[in-house]
Amino acid sequence: MEKNEMKNQGSIGIFDSGIGGVTVLKEIIKLLPNEDYIYVSDSKNNPYGDKTDEEIIKRCDEISSFLINKNCKAIVIACNTASAKASKFLRNKYKEIPIIAIEPAYKMVHDYAYDKETLILATKGTIMSKRFKHILQEYNNNKTYVMSCIGLADLIEEGEEGKTRKYLEVNLKRYVGKVKNVVLGCTHYPLIKNEIADILGDVKFFDGAPYVAKHLKRVLEKRKIIKQELEKGNIEFFDTKKSNDKKNRFFEILGENYEWFKSNNNLKRMYRLLRLIFFKRKVNNKKDNIKNRTQKIVLDKNQLLKRFFSYSIK
Image (tube, rainbow, N blue to C red; front, side, top):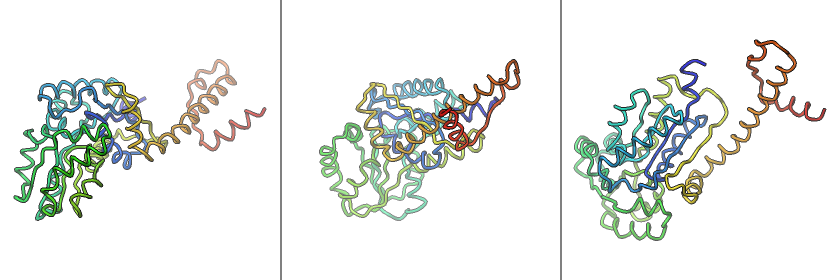
């Protein structure tokens, strides 16, 4: 198998300090449904917002190393704080692997709604980062409020709906009637868009996830490592706390996308099994023929199913 063909088979690694990065994964799946994914939720070290730069870089390095050892061909940092603090380090260390980072979509406000009053919601760690300060300075429309949402991602992570609602009511009331744009500067925040809209009214949301998905697809296409198989991909989930509750919530949020993957994975497993069955049958019928022993058999799925059932009733 050639080098590029091997890379085509690799997974896409995605990580966040928790399960908020599922909002990024959902956007990626829309564009790249046939890829395999490995998601790491670092809930044992959540939140990243109160960690030092050195601590965040260390965790991101360890997770990236884990994903590369799992044969990932690309890594997506689905956390704004981790992206701001660690993306440069990771790109310098892992030059052979594309590292895709997310950041608050404030530039999109500049491009599409520059003259509107804007509220940026982000963690303290993101707001204090050099990268965020640079973005804010470069694209500032002088009509922008920045709100440090201390503790909000944790409430969302734990599914504390009542406490999340109370938090928003208390902290957003000062912006009611004052803003038209809301930048969701944490991957957890798209999960509460409806609640934010209930309080702020008719606002336009800006979220970096769709742009990350588009950028990832462009990178895979440019490097010619996009998966060519037509079967829908697989999703593996790892949580550093090994929490089944996290896993269940993750797939619950993933919703229909996961059901789509799950049903197609059953077909994919059957397809691989049937190929193996007919490959062995052909080998057994061609004794001592090394060429036939290693020959690849390519069959249409419908042909495989027909032949499977015809053999099974003999």
